[in-house]
Image 1: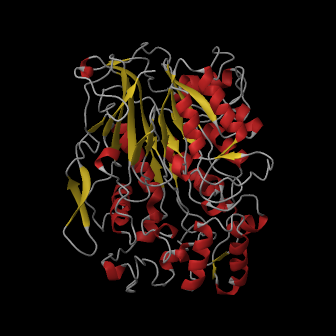
Image 2: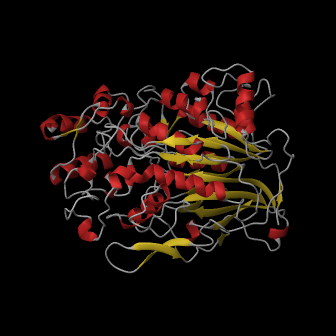
Image 3: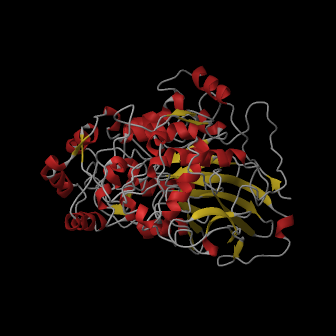
Length: 583
């Protein structure tokens, strides 16, 4: 059994809010900060960043070190994984064979006896690409489904139920499956929302922090979207129509749409959680430069385009994929010319796009504090600077660094501006005696978008290769943890590991536990363990309860036409032990 070193315990919400209010509040925080913006390094209970500090230190009255439990694989893919049964057509799911742990010695050799010498340095969970989605949003481009499966998915109406089920899974975990150490926090690595919508942001924050969520917009009493359109392009779950999906075996489920917009209840995470921003959080459609009044007006309006000739859809998708229309000028023209062929829907101001400032304000709102910290990594100083990157203390020996890799110039690939890259270098240097875990949305391979930030037209942008170079130059950087690609992929970079995790909207709908340990022999190990939501594998089409919807969310995603079968990655990208040389 491993020894646990400075692993955080769960945070008492009332203690957190009382501490925050004790120093005077502004937008629910009002905390004084230590020197240097964007850092969660606390200096004292009165002047330090208390919310972030509490997320990584023991709650009042708790023992200095929380003992590790016996490691357990329960609730992880080391025990079982969803798998299809039967063959052909629409396939039902059941419990399948577990995914084994694979030792990867590319950076450092595995030495015998290390399991008896280990000291746990960090133990936490990564969520990524939840894509909490308002499926009735007028700005969605579902009509490009023929060009890309990501334009519309048959499971999307259940994204909130799916996210809540993932929260329930994490709450039920006993600790790290490799070490038994208590899990000290959850980090989301972006695309928390799907279409940069205020409604989606509220649903995401409530699912994470706890409360009641009604995943409906527009008409408060009925669904208005492509799944009641009568169009064969989309699965019409309550109609007799032989749509394209039913021809592949998709079921008819009476009451599905009413259930999809019914109120849900999230228990909220029982541990602190932190937030990292992604392109779908910052850009309309995840790809167009923000701030355009046309898109803002269209988002809250009463018209929705649901069908498009295939040739026009192909041209639009080509422009998106190749980054030919980062400001969305061609997209705007298409919407203008198609106005007479749009469906009337109920307008809703809640669908308005949120700005980076509004994203920060929402995170800082005490009603979304949950298990803390208030702001979930972001602070009043970040709000004042309109800054979406920060650092925070994980344990005595480990810091976390959250980056904003979205390019405000548009397109779904990312990059960093010079100022943020230099900040990253300074932060790594300042904490050179601590191990650093870097979190971002984009992967190194998807940071190739070097368009200037319209707000900083003279600032150079930097790609993933430059970030890799910076991290290799600072030996305390041990892991870069990200998402975006919706695929499990773990890549060695000579001195650190890049850990990319599959999304929770596309099958196999995963999150990842990560444990960092010192092996006591000159090496470190990063244990990665994938988890699924708490929803049962087997579905019942008559069960439209919250639990039943969570199960349907997974099964529909498995059967979604066009789903990429390789998203689970290879065994070396799933459950692993990643060896490193200790700096």
